[in-house]
Amino acid sequence: SWSRPVGCPNKVRQSRKMGGTWIHETLVAFTFLATSLPDALVIALFSGIGFSSSIFGLVADDNVVLFQGLSGVLSFLGLLLYFLLDIGKASRKVGIPFTVAIFLCLLALSISVSLDYPWASPFLCLQASFVILGFMRSNFSCVSTKDFFTATAMSLSICGTITLAIWIGWRMHINLDLFNFDFDIYAASENDALIS
Image (cartoon, rainbow, N blue to C red; front, side, top):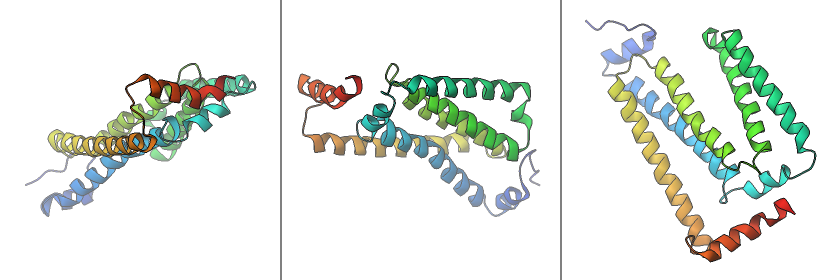
């Protein structure tokens, strides 16, 4: 008596008859990946916990203007072609690589301007989670809204807890109170080489 919703694969229909475990396990795994991978990227590349000093050191070079221009032009052309050619309605073999290429161009642009706008790269990476989740929602249209957002909330909670644990471990490792003037001096000394 269960009717197959539009866009719902046969495997999902069979899963519903068996209790729906396959689709829900897949949903939880994919939402966790969609939220954890951008978080890991931010922690590893764009925070004091990871390699942000090295990343920002690369863009402190005088030749970064050429890189900024190239990544900016490629980002603009990619977005323009995405809308003019309606890539969003193309097959996944075309749409996903094109979207990933645009994201990488935008990430390169945000990294190249990171000395002036240090929040740009982490912000872009964290927003990628919501874009991926939106794409997933359209592919998991046969799952109820409640189930989808329950899995998403659970994944975001787990990622937030892991990020907090990493931050607490880092904070204990540097042996500084992060909410006083000593930490400001420490952070300034870490980034001093970028502007000299």
